[in-house]
Length: 79
Image (cartoon, rainbow, N blue to C red; front, side, top):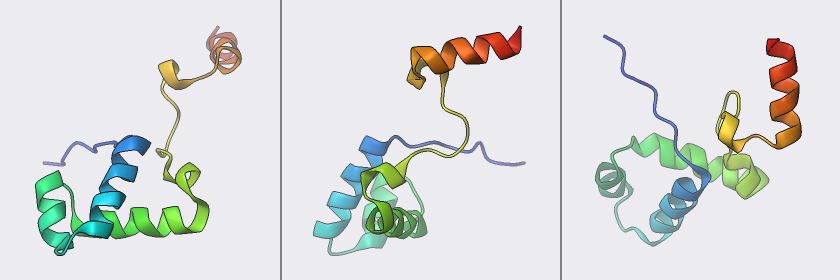
């Protein structure tokens, strides 16, 4: 049975990275946050490569996160 894929907000990722910098044990921090240790390192590499903007979610943006213009364009396509 496949696990449901979780998405994390940019704010969560930034807070996790800040905690990671201060953490003595990254594995314990990951367990506390309920994520894999490797994910913290992935987020750190993304952040180092492109700043906070690089920590965006993959896939299509949710309708509430889309601009009014993009949302109206999406509705036109759906029609």
